[in-house]
Image 1 (cartoon, rainbow, N blue to C red):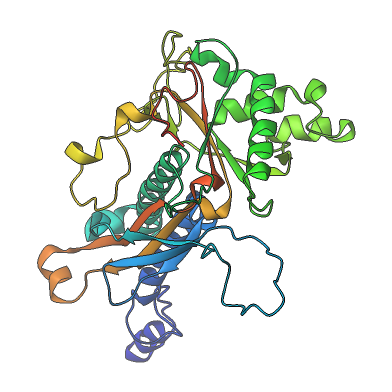
Image 2: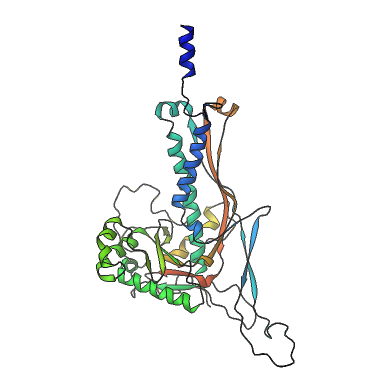
Length: 381
C-alpha cells in the first residue's frame, strides 16, 4: 500500500508548477501578467499613435520643437555664420508624469478554488482595460487641446502654424457628426490643412466614435471609400474602411465626444447628435469628461474641462501632435507569502505612471459639429 501511495504522489501533476518543481502557483501568476498586458495592449490604441518616451530619474521630460527656416543667397566674401534672421527658432514643451495610476482587485483563495484558476485571467483583463481606457482618454484630450492651440514658437518675426478645427456639416445641429458625406468632406479638408501646414503625411490617423465609423461603412456603395469588389466583406466585417485621404481610421469609445467619452444619447441639439440609447448600457458608457481641475486628484498636466469638449466629435492627427511620457509602464504586482496567508487570498494590482500633452499643434485637427469653428475654444492664431 505504501508503494502504491508513493507512486500516486509521484505522478501528481501540478498545473501551476514550472517544470514540475518549485512553487505550485508560479505559472498562475505569470498567466495573470500576460493577461493584464494583453488586455492593455488590445485596448490602448493611442499609445502607438503619438510620440512616446520612457522617463527615468526625473518627474518630467523635455520635448524640443524646431520651427521652419529659409534659404538665403550667399554674398561673395561674406562670412557664413547662420541665417541672418537667426532661424530656425526653437521652443520646448515639458510633459510631467501624473501620479501613479492603479487598478486592483482582491482574489479570495476559496472563491478561486470553487470557480476556476482562470478567474485571475478574467480579472487581469479588466484591470488592463481600465488602465488602457484612462491612458487613451488622457492622450485624446491632449490632442483635442492641441488642435485649439497656437504654435509654441513665439520668436519675434516668426509665425509657425497652429492647430486646426474643422466643422462637420454646415448647420447648428450636432447630428451632422453622423452624416457620412459631411465626415468624408471633413477628412479631406483635414488632409489639405495638414499639407498646407507642412505636416508629414506619414503617421496620419483619425479617431471616430463607433457610430460614426459604422455610418461610413454603411455608405460604401456611394462614397467610394471601399472598392466595389470588396463591399460585401467590408459591410459584413465592419472593418472595411481603411483610410480616407491617406488618413487611417480607428474607432474608440475614449475620444471626447460632446462633453462625454465616445458617445452621447438624447434629443438632437447643438451639443447632442440625437442618437437613441440602446438601453441597459451600464454606468461605464456615456461617462462625462471629468473636470481635471476639480474632479480628479493626481493630475499634473492640463487635460481640459468638460465644457471645453461641448462640440467635439472626432480627431485627426499626425504622430507629432502629442507626446506621452511613461515613468512606469504597465506592470503587475501580486501579494504572496505571509500576506496571502493572513488574508487567504491575493491582491492583484496593475499600475502605470504616465503623462501626456500636445506637442505640435499644427499636427492636430479637431472635428466639431453643432457650432461654428472657434466657438468651442479655438485660440487666436
